[in-house]
Amino acid sequence: MALIDLRSDTVTRPTAAMRAAIAAAEVGDDVFGDDPTVNALQARIATMLGKEAALFMPSGTQSNLSALMAHCQRGDEYLVGQHAHTYKYEGGGAAVLGSIQPQPIAHQADGTLALADIAAAIKPDDAHFARTRLLTLENTFGGQVLPFDYQREATDLARRHALATHLDGARLFNAAVATAQREGGDAREHARRIAGLYDSVSVCFSKGLGAPVGSALVGSAELIQRARRHRKMLGGGLRQAGVLAAAALHALDHHVDRLADDHANARALAQGLSDLPGLTVVPPDTNIVFVDLAPGIDGAALVRRAAAHGVLFTGLYRLRLVTHLDVSAEQIHQAVRVLRAAVSAT
Image (cartoon, rainbow, N blue to C red; front, side, top):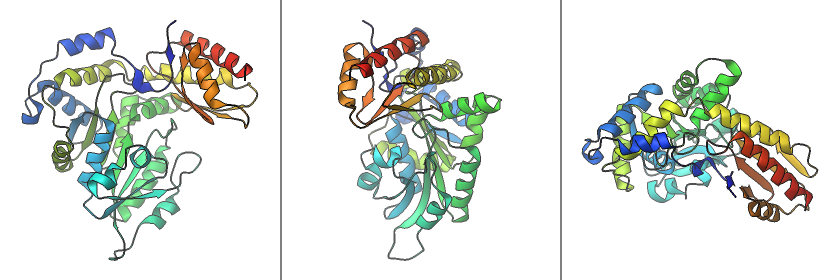
C-alpha cells in the first residue's frame, strides 16, 4: 500500500530529473565563494525577486534568523504575528541567539496584522523600551495569500516609522501562483512584485518546489554580507553545496508553475470533505487544507485510523492536510475515500 503523505509539503522527494541535475552539479567550496552552482542559484533567485544579492541557506529557519540578526542588534525588537513561523515555530532563535525581542501581534481572520495594531506596537525612543527596528510578515500564512494592497500598506507604515521589513516567504511562489490564477499574469512577476515591498525575503526550495534541502535570503548586497557572517556563526557555512543548489535551480526551472496542480488538489480535497457532519472545512487559498472538528470528534483517533489505511496528516482539534508534487489527483480521491470512512467510524 503506497502512502499518501499529507503531513507537509516538506516530505517531497527529488524527482528523477532533479536527481540527475544533482549528480551532474559542478561544485566548489562555498565558504570561499568557489561553488559555481551555488553562485548561479544565488544570482538567479536574486534576479528573479529583484534584489541585489542572495545567500543560500540550509533551512528556512536559518534564513529567517540570519535576516533578523542582520536587521537588528542586541536589545532591538521586531514586530511579528502571534502565530508566525519566525515567532512560534523556530525555537525562539531571535531571542535566544540574537538577543532580539519579539513583539507578537494578534492575527486577523485573513492572516494579516491590523495596521492599527502594528502602529500601536511601535515603541517610542525611550530607554525603558526595546528599540523597534523591524516588521516581519509571512506570505503565505497558513496557506492564505496576504493581499498585495495590504502588504503595501503595512510596509509603507513600517517605513514611515523608519522600520525595516522582512518577509518570511517560505511559500512565496505558492502565493505568486495563486495570485496569477486569480488575476492573470506570470507567477514569477507576481513573486518579484511582492518581494519588491520588502527589504529582505526568505524563500524556501524544499517545500512546494520539491528540492530536498535549502532556502535563500535575498536583499541588498550590504544586508546579505551581514547575513553571511550570521550564517557562519549559526553553523551554516557550506562547502560543496552545489549538489543542493542544483536541485533548487531545477525546481525554479520546472516546479513553479506546477504549484497550480497542488492548489487544484487542495480544492478537490476540501470539496470532498465539505459535506461531512462534524467537520468544518476551511476553503484553501493554496495547498493547505484545514479542517475544524466539532466537539466530541477524537482528532487523534481520526489521524490514527486514516494512517492505518495509508493516509497521513496531522492535527487534534484542527486537521492540517498539505498537497504537494508527490500526491496525484487520483491519490487525492483515495484520501477523500479514506477520510470519509474514518469520519463515519467515529
